[in-house]
Length: 517
Image (cartoon, rainbow, N blue to C red; front, side):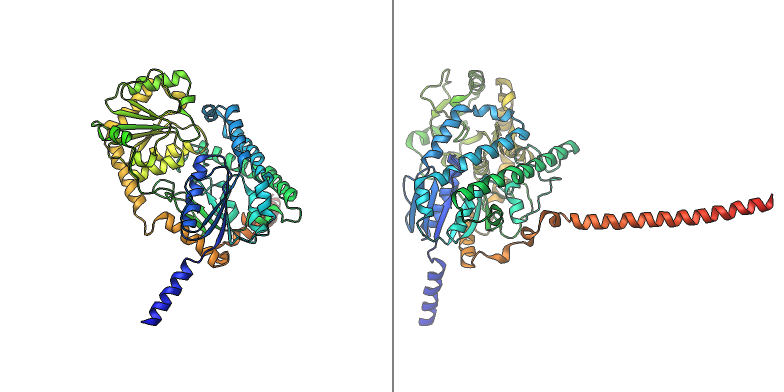
């Protein structure tokens, strides 16, 4: 009995052994930060010593281990500057062929700000050691040098699923024949023209990364780490990739062993709603339509003609409307519309009276609508939102309305179809059942795999050999060239052989004719 107790204590001590973990989440978007902080908070609550680099700060620090913040105020300043310069609602009109290189340029410029921050420089030169560095993958490859600097295991976090930014770094296959780019609203079953465009986008991404992004990030590394490694030495060094995806809402695609899906890990058990909001939802006998364009898009920035069209459509419904509206006043506000500058979205979607969710189609909103089983109307604007809208349509639990076609009539028809046709709720509940049917909760899965790669010193046994091959070997171009040469030579030799035989036969035939004559 004593031996059993000792073994149990040793086992528990081993499983909760504290590690020093650095999280690098510099993207100045609240959704990105929310994902990063959810993971880092959970690691701290498990007993780890956590440091997070981010533009945002936590109000309530987690209990358990240590949680240290290194803030990036310049990142937030850049966000506000860009927000004032760019009309977010016009981004959907930009072609991916322009958007991809522009995004690479923009994020590279913002990404260097991290190394300029005084507190980050203090950390870099502090002589501290970390067991693992978790880096958010968003045109941020230079940041991976931090794992090298701190002699730590490198973990990559993707706020979306597997994509072209990550696949090549871990040797994950991603054929454009059935895997559409995240900026395209294509299904897996693409037409010839769609496959052609998807292939061109894939080639453009590859060229942008290899001809601009990687040299640019190599320059950043050389600037701030003169004796540091080449960018290619840190690019392919990921021991683990955590993907914010799940087959219940994402297209099933290949994953190499060190790619782990943890979609929905940020969702927590619903808390008590504020009293006024709870009363509003409880008293909505005909149901509630919840409308939010996320944390980066502001409904208050909608042009007046779009806003008025939305209000006229809302006024035709007997359902109550809960609208995330960032200003104090909404001109022409109908009686059935309640405004709020912020709502606890997960708690709202969990309420049984919520009949429908109108959203921009951001990934977190898409995950939450499936998790809570609420049909969705997507008004996609930019990024992966069009692809998420296509997935909702393909899975039968939502519809999409493009921003250009957003008017009173179209909005009313889409909303009425989603409310009156029970198939959408049936389908989303089916997907929700699949989403919940897992052997372990996604957050527990994430924590396990972070501990696993630390415990096994980077878990090199999970890495595929593709990351060690030059591109021409990976694509078998050398084999193709040799086989082409062999087939070509064989064809030429066979042609010459047959030609010689033909000439002999022709010569003999000609001689016979001469003798007869």
